[in-house]
Length: 430
Ligand code: EPU
Image 1 (spheres, rainbow, N blue to C red):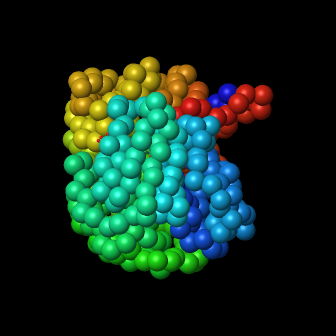
Image 2 (cartoon, protein in one colour):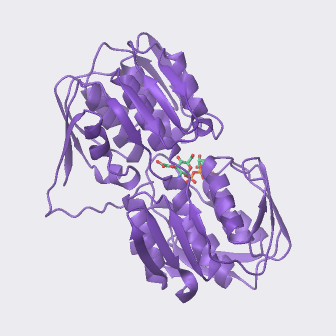
Image 3 (cartoon, rainbow, N blue to C red):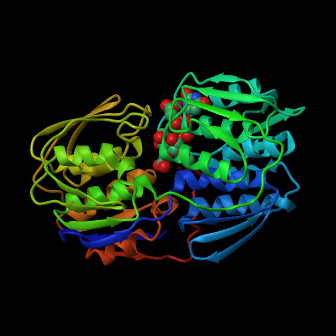
């Protein structure tokens, strides 16, 4: 398996450009199915989750072509199947967006259960409830294949019992061509929800209220192709912000939407990090040892759960004791065991961790338990004394575009060692 080796201790310095947002693109790519036309998507990150979504589109019959490194053209007029098999869905959570998109296109979708990073139970009951309200009969075959069938979808009022990014996006996809009005209440408000709505509207949909907790979708008969550029990745940006602060570096983070990063910026400032905000960039200056601070993850606009492992790593070397509470997932502290190997002093009690800041970490062999856990290992390796060797980096490849190259350009002593003989796909992620 490929590994990443880091000799820690170099402060990150320079500029880094953030790629397109994974969690927006994984909704936008299935949404192209609705156009039955050609869509050109720009600012597409080069990550394995995207490659997998493009493979599923290709398998369904779409014509997929890379115009350049970050631009993909998808002609969905040739799609002739509504079946997505387990060998495709097992690789990533976001494969469930094909249910909403195929339902909207064909009134039918047969999609195998999605994979996903293992941080507790990940039910999809809210997706199913919503599809049913829109007039779909959903059958779960041996808990493996979701068979959603309808005689044409009709709008309805869907109140989500929990704020769910996935359910909100999936139901938006299903509803854009449903007859009449669909209202999603208690909707998620993440930037990627707004981005998906903007993309759907660029194709001729009528989606209003995305970014608030009530989204109204008036069904339209037909959508058309368009050219669309995805937003920058909030979590990649946050990861570089924390890495800059943790290494006491000075990094200009370019191609960001500062508003999307406010909860992270705010916590960094509380830790004593200097943050200068510009129109589409942020300058991070980690001038001294970070101070303790308490963090609770919540749905947007709260502090993102997908930044929790990275921020805990910063707090592991902060002055004083911090409490980190996880408000979204039941089991997202598995990576703490890896940090402990490097000398971190963190005690986990259920969905909260007490982080006693230590002076420094020591390099060690560690593994990425999931995507963001992998990002935490990168940050830990950058600050640790000595060499850190990270295994299971296929997880990191799912969500970080050229992370080794970007960190090298910032002065990190980091390299990837490739073992070409080893298969690179794992069973679950994202
Ligand atoms: N939930 C339910 N029922 C449902 C759906 C969700 O009870 O039908 C619960 C979940 O168990 C969880 C909470 O609702 O406790 C939130 O789950 P959500 O549906 O919002 O998560 P998701 O859509 O599966 C996306 C991101 C995750 C990110 C979460 C929360 C994608 C592909 N994944 O997952 O991103 O952690 O939202 O923001 O968009 C990552 O990028 O590393 C990642 C894991």
